[in-house]
Image (cartoon, rainbow, N blue to C red; front, top):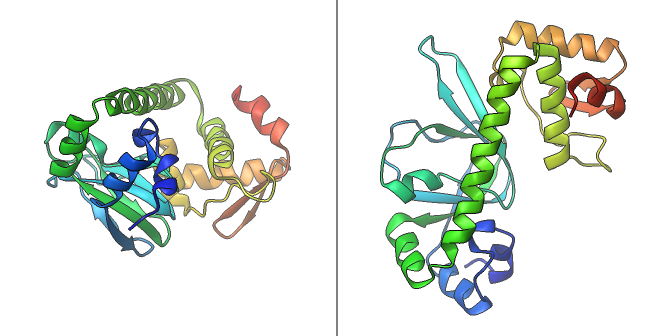
Length: 225
């Protein structure tokens, strides 16, 4: 059973007392996914919400041409799959583990039961959903107004802000060029060129799938981040 203190960092449950968190923890089940494993597909039944303990998960859909379009990357303390347990409808997107990922799962019946007992959770849920909506709006604006190279630069800065290591220099996420392309709404070839240009400008260093920021201000100046 997870410690209640581990759930305190999850925004959905931030307003619950320690005793209430202990009761909630009894309803959670642990699941582990290996790197590259699909956690669920779009349109699959959605009766479970996931809380990430460790690892990272990418949320994606497939275009009509079969290209993956990614919307976000979630890490420790983040929740995903929450929409389906709120409305009872099939999944609106797919989820895949970017690395070995350990999660805690909460089934819809248990979630609704806790929500009925603790309606104050609704305020935290609204905060999470509002943040997701704002993120999606910013994502669409980026697609509309930024070129590929600037979108790649903005995504590198965003991932570093959320998951950066080594005092914010290493972005802390290993992505293939295809995965990064999905996150910025571009082709793998155009992302490959954008990364090469940013490297040649001395803004980043590339080592396999790892990206290190060399000139943060230079990246920020490109994007208005």
